[in-house]
Image (cartoon, rainbow, N blue to C red):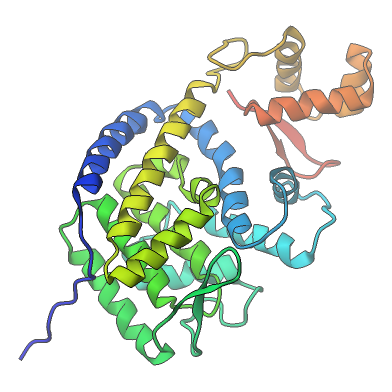
Length: 334
């Protein structure tokens, strides 16, 4: 006699149906818009925001500027664990477009990247009891026993592969069930959010440029409340509604950011550049090894002013630093 097919308890209400329609229309448009050079630039810019948001939700205190500095190989005065968390998250997100979110082995691979060096059990399911902790340190859910984890995750992935539900629904249900099971000793929150982005990215590439981590970070209390409400209700409907609202918000935010990213140097598409900024970009296109001191000398300004010019162009998405401060070079994004 065959065993009963596992189906996670969830309900797609009227609100969710309307949100799915809105998101589908918005993401299809956005997916087409970001297929060119601007889309590549937007992905690079948002990768830093994603890593910052993902680690900040878990209590990491590094600012976005400090995260940027860490990823550029600069020295940052901060707890080593927080620096390591950023580097691990960067390694995981570097792999997001190459992993298969429908395979358990890829989940274990990503967890090892995300938590390698941070916990001894990185890349392996837990063997101890754990609970879901909210942003204030309160236990809002005690996870199933460790002995149940392998089967629960096998069933969840089987459902993910076989379900005919809309990808938006599947990504939300998986995310909630993942947090309910809490399959790892540590790193469940950041891995669960990552996995939802990975599932959505396989559906529409736009989600690689519009990850949900920052939106969740800005709505942490609502995120944990949705988990609590779903647990009390016995199905993930409240979490689905919450996440779909956040996903739509993320797409709209990224669409607006996309409109403000210039196509190339000298062309103003929402991003205003001064004459000096445009001139500096042309100089760096010819010689990417120019230092702040040499730029200061060229324009008869202070080194600090030159550094501010470079920082401003980086934030606007026109410049990327490749390599170290001494041996690296500037790359103009156009």
